[in-house]
Length: 94
Image 1 (cartoon, rainbow, N blue to C red):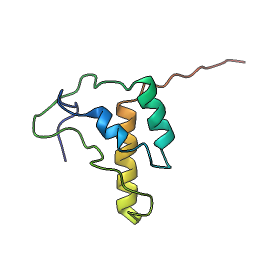
Image 2 (image 1 turned 60 degrees about the vertical axis):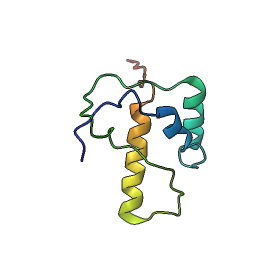
Image 3 (image 1 turned 120 degrees about the vertical axis):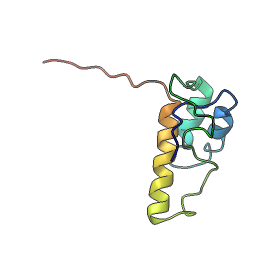
Image 4 (image 1 turned 45 degrees about the vertical axis):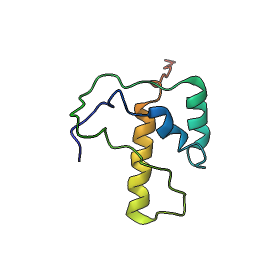
């Protein structure tokens, strides 16, 4: 558990993203994110003990299973969302 909700200035977001580029689940998205530019942390609290929960390294699809795989998937997707551009959608009324 961590109380930090912001990445410290010394956290290597780009390096953490680069570790995920070869993963078949989100690698293409990560490569595009690196090419176009990722968001920096906006706001939040850095408690100083460690950054928000992030993937520490890439794990192949067959490396984990069951609950471990589901938790890892959630951690990576949350990290990617935290450094991705905001979602934009369009509504149409008919």
